Structure formats: structure tokens, C-alpha cells
Image (cartoon, one colour):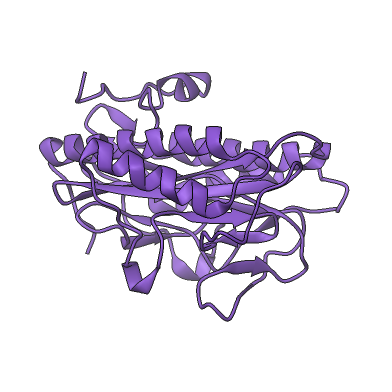
Amino acid sequence: MVEIKTPEQIAKMREAGLVVAEIHRRCAEAAVPGASTKDLDDVAAAVLAERGAKPNFLGYGGFPATICTSVNDVVVHGIPDRDTVLKAGDLISVDAGAVVDGWHADAALTVFVGEGHAPQLHELSRVTEDSLWAGIAAMRRGSRLVDVSRAIETYVRRQPLPPSGKYGIVESYGGHGIGSEMHMDPHLLNYVDRRRGRGPKLVPGMCLAIEPMITLGTAKTHVLADEWTVKTNDGTWAAHWEHSVALTEEGPLVLTAPDGGRARLAELGVTAAPDPLG
């Protein structure tokens, strides 16, 4: 069943979302050549401790770290360690979460390490992030879950093709409901699968973690022997962007964006809901 939140519960999720936003800010600053992915995990753990929040990744299904750090051809669920040292030209997605008084938030961003990135990598990240915002803008009262999926896929498919000839929309992983747990119904595809129907109607109180994962090639992935790390089958690089979003009576509120999503949604002709924290 889809969990419907009260305004007070959404406010708690907003508190957690601002902690995630701070983790992202600090990790993006720390993602420099010579830093290990464990260094970024330590940064995230420090932010959680400072803010009095709890990690929702650590221990989840046995996951051994505070955040996921996915470098280059790793799509998602990369495990931070001391041996993975960043170098100029790398692309890393940092997927982070936080829990405040039992309410969750979850978001990811893609960071360019140093300089020297090929133009198609910049475009890959842009297309992925912009498709996320297209999906968020489609989160309207009375729409259905598939409308968010369609907005993401349509945006990606309308972009000029990269030199590799295609963008792969990862099929095995997608977004999800979020609230009193990190992963809840409904599952959100980043493309339209007509076999799944239209999905539930979007109503105030529904919260989704929307997270497109796009590659420069295949949509197919495999999991490494650690049972977590997900890589592309063809070795092409991937980008991953995610926000947790609440649908309120006054529109969408991007829980994990510092401004609640106001600026980006305004560019798309959508008014973000007022921030319950002021």
C-alpha cells in the first residue's frame, strides 16, 4: 500500500532532506583527486552526527557504509573503501540518506572529479539531472505514477544522441516511495512499461524518491560478487541523480533540495509548495 503522509510528517521528512542536502554539499567539496571513497563516507557520517540524524543506508540489507559511492561505470550501490581513490576525470555519484525522528529522505547527485572530462560526460550528467526535474514537474495532483515515468523517458529520448549513439535508461533499478521507510511502494520506473499499467493516482501526502540512472550505452547491468556494486554490462559510464519529493495540497516540495525545488521548478512553469520549515 502507498503511505500517505500528514503535513507534520512531511515537515519531518524535509528536516531529513536538508541533512541529505548538506551531505551532498560537503561530499561534492571533498570529491577531489586523491580522496578515497571512504573519505566521502566519513564526511557523510560526520554530517549525520552533527545534525543529530541517523543513516538509513548503513546496515540496510547488510550494506556496510553510510553512503553509496559509484564511480564511472558503476551505476549504483558502490561501496566506499580506502582502495578506491578518485582521480581527475572521474565521475562519481553520491547516493545519501538520512532519518529524522523515524522519517526518511534519500537523494543522489553526480560529481565531476577534477578536470579533463569529455564533453559527452558533461552532457550525460545534464541529461540525467534534467530528466529528473522533468519527472518532478510531472508529479501533479490527479496525474498517475506512469506520468512521472513518461516525463523522464520522453526527456531523455528527445536529447541529441552522444557519440556512443544512444543513452541507456537503466531498467533494473528505479525510484520508489519513501516515508517511514526508505524503500516503499510504489516502484517507479524511469521509462514506460505498458505491461505495468498506469500505476496509482498521485494525491497529496504521497512522497516519491525519483532517480533516473542513465548510461552512455547499454541499459543492462550486472551485480558484482560483493552483492551490491552494480556496473554496466558494456563498461560505459553512468550518471545518477535523485531527489525525494512530497506532493502537497499546494504542489510538489523537493525535500532534498536546499530551496525546496523552487528555482528549477519555476523554470519548468511549476510552482513549488511552500517550505514547511520556513
